Image 1 (cartoon, each protein chain N blue to C red):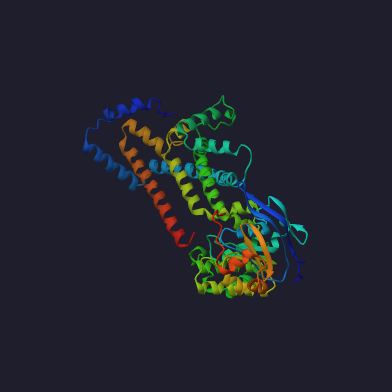
Image 2 (tube, rainbow over the protein chains, first blue to last red):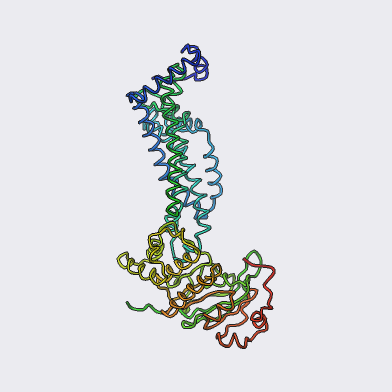
Length: 256
Length: 247
């Protein structure tokens, strides 16, 4: 296992070990990074694909949980609802490392789910990212649906829509905002390093993803791969942002 | 198609509504029968919208009862429709807005297309069928709301100030649609503060002021010889609207 324990000291030493001492080294790192990207270096491609698979799976599961849960919180009134809302807001702002720690404790051999043997697998990473993203999607869904319900309530009740029917209708009516919420969740998950590092272990060819590789390779002084992945991460963010804008513009043209 | 039994008459029995400790509907009793086009007339803030929502079952009275041919509200809502002052359009096409209403009311998909075409043609919206509903003008939206209500063929149609924000031409179009729906056998119960509109549409007038029903009179009699001094003053334009306004 190629874990990276003392990150802080490692970072401090990185520059020294790599012996890079200026702009020219930085430039050569950029050059090799570009080369890795354009030649579709197999290590790089593998890591990128794994990252996308983990994050997309996590966001999909989080959406399947978060959308109906948020809609239910918006439309139903029950004792303890306010408590759940506070909990949700708390979870939204939770530092990823603590979520990672929590999942680690659950999945570690002596933990309650230890027998599943999920620690240091991509499944564990999906669980951790899902826990990070689901509260965001649920909280934003709750807010969106509640605002829409305020506007639609009389009309939908007059038509005779059931609460379940209304929930479905409002989720569809709020699709632009909710899509944005999901992309925001995707952004948080794909940029996150602490949680997946703890539960995934950053094992080469198994659980190594973009963010954990960047952390590791930087500390090792292998700036080319780190920078290559960094560029790709930035591009992913760019695509997400462009996607949000493009989606909104298209939806707007359709009066959504 | 066999005609379902009528849900009318609508009977209000000493209906009271309190909102935030304030009495906004005061002891209203009335019987509304199937035939006439009933206009709820009164100044702004009289409680007209609330009265309509009480009848439609969207809000429950604090005291008193609302019954339809003896049955409580909830059981007969499927035979009613309401057009709101600011109707909400779903974020989809004009035709899909009507299809949604038909689906919620359980109409089979097979007969929806023809029904949609029919009401769009009658409301002059056919060429907008595939346009996004939220892109329509205020007047077109109001006509779409009427088309949506018309499509589900209600026995009773509630209209809350349907022309309040329309220009004269738009008002005229909407009134013609309302009259057509009424001629088709639908009971129309509509609020307005517009005296001229009430004259044009009403068969009977229910005059509401400060949450109290002052009179329910056939239109001809109301406009020539109102029974109450409040109605008299409203007709003369000297009844000043409620200062402590109720939403």
